[in-house]
Length: 548
Image: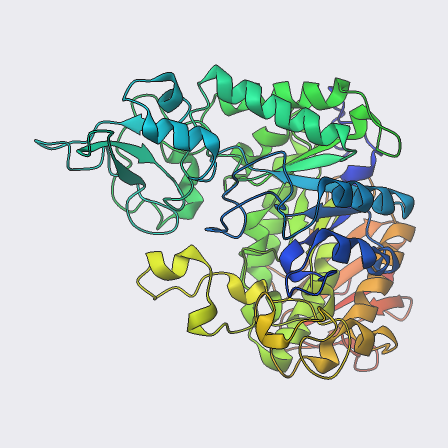
């Protein structure tokens, strides 16, 4: 069955429908000035690595001025460049170099909150209750006899109450402000016209600097239910019902995103950037109901939304098949591609998540071929193409707010934000000219064989697998038909066609899966046993019949 045609700019064949996008976390990618912190010039100098890899686009996580209470997602100036990462001219140079290499550039826009050091919030805290300055944020009087209790029961995603009380100008305890994340990230009120106008200005600013699209951070959280009702117990226990929370997935999001899409579609494009109607909006929406998630990429809204159900799925054939089929069906209903992702700056790396050691690496290799064969867009987080495991950060070097907010129970996400190993036999592996102890995070001492240089000429390396897969993927564009998955009901293995010339088969079970004699193997994640696909292995092939 052919996917339904759509209108509103979601044309079939535009670059973002099948794009492979590489995520750069700047402070951990490459240091260009030797201070131990990755920066924009360092990233620019290594864009050739991405061109060699074969990606279509790069997504750069926040490089804005920030106190770094949450890895740069607490922003003090949404149109600035952090001084430790470079200058506006350095950003322009990165965009120009990427475009010269044929790579599109996406950046983060973070509209749910600002830093507590943002000029707006400083003004709000100094102002009186009910003032226009406080109206840009969500301030409320507390409950209890003296306002000593939070306004409602909402909990922060980082643990603890989602409310913090301020002291008023006279020194007395006063109103509370909402922060769905860290206290240093006060939530904006998206029913305030100043807020709406400010982010339209932010979008225009970066479009004028040549960006080709935006990844919208926590896109599902901007509006909160009128009256701020209690959420009830177990708010974060059943994430698959996120859309039922009063601070997630509100109806007012969709008119806003349609306005943003119209802005992107009409704003003039500078030289080197894509045409206005080819720009892309990517939703980071933690919504697990496929029909609800698909609404973010309905015609006239965004074009991509990350598939967290796939990222969080365990290495289990039946579970993987269910997620893939549900995701494809949900997006087909609105004519949008599925956006597959295995890793990010917020997730435990696949090698570790799938079991660690040689087992985890074998499964991560198979998962990579599975993801890259699936029709739709795909995102690759820096270091994923090297097979990096999650690193352990010493207690005294942890930066993630989850560490403190959990009472030192949750070590947070820093283990996937360790600087990349580029070359050499010891830290900092070519990441920086600084001493290892002065780098952004300490690197493991056993990563020499995982460096880009070490894997560059090794045909068996994870890097070689990614390069080969991206070449084949481009040579075999996905068919514009409904995805059909074949295999036994228990999920021991399944297979699907990407195109008329490429089929992917993944074996999760202990029993080897035989290939038909007519199948020509194009690529496999691990060596085959003759004509049989062993456990935890994915294979790309040309073939006409499915295994029996």
